[in-house]
Image 1 (tube, rainbow, N blue to C red):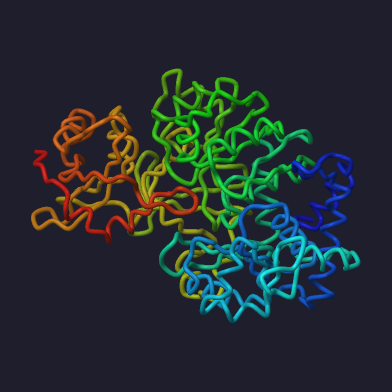
Image 2: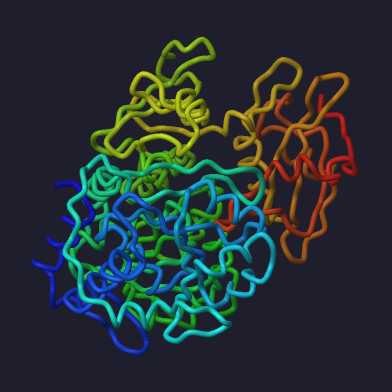
Length: 521
């Protein structure tokens, strides 16, 4: 069965004596951890009275307790709803209400939020993820789990919702994505083959667990590997964890990798255990990919492309593709990879017709990891999930070898003077300037062209740049109509919890209004 309880039962049966959890206080085997998961499922069902299909909200940083509670929910047939802790209290409350959560499990770090409206209404339904009760909360996770008797595994259908993940960054009303048991397990099967997962692998959870990228770790659970958790990212903490726990698989976003390479702590730790760096969620400039491969010469670089609605991975650019890129096919570094086994991809134009290989259009996908749709959003579900295909909202193209190039979000494509410009292509050109640390290109209103390209740049330390210098750098690298007409410099770009640049915030800000305009043609 492609269900999480079935997967966990198999893992304990085959790998029960393997370490499951790596902690400074002592490792836990799969036998020991499954005992705690079954106990936690017991208090969810019997103590809290939750029924299969009901939902429990989780507001927490990465931790063993959050992982244990999530697995216990799978075991009991309860649907976990991990919430983005960077949202404002009204937005958090909106997610909890929209999901219909019965209980909120909360990290002590965020417990003070329960004193603020409208989250104060959740105080009587809050469960503190801690060893002992504090902050005036009556319910404490460890105490309730320890007092409960183990519950047998619930037997869900493969099509039952396993987890509800909300899309959206730190602004706007997100959509709850209904990810099923089949979605999670199928994607784990698809990824495990390419990643070559073995029982001795160890996975470091760095990205926030409310994000779909955390589901990638299921392929390690499936093969009896182990897990370590960082409550928050810092370059030093990641390097220390790799050394201490002999981590073999690190899942990171590009901004994390760049910060690690720039940190003084890099080079002071033994990271020889690391065999895979899996990166994604936002484009990584080719220059930084080369630097990363140089800094980790024995590590397999694997870029993944996916979305929350695809649980999460659709395509992988594996280590062989990276090596091929360095051997003369540098354009491959801009590809999202090749679709996983069982994934079908179509590229369509605005009229809904399939385009020829090499031509661009919206990316449509279907496969066993495509979610059931959106919770309480029938219109959005009908629009995005049509005739068996999920419309990703991304613009891309497939080449003759089946590599999928993701050019832009459909909403981020800029039409200037009647020409379509994919901002990722402009950004790739600007990133080749040694004085550029980060850049985001957006469209801004323009009386002559309808929209004009504006590059918002963060200069590298020690560099002083001018708009004219950036524009001159672009000439000869990209077509004249693709060169930004405006350039603005900022100290930092707005980002989501996953390090993804929030272009919608740049569009709303006054930054671009203060930018310098230059003629490019």
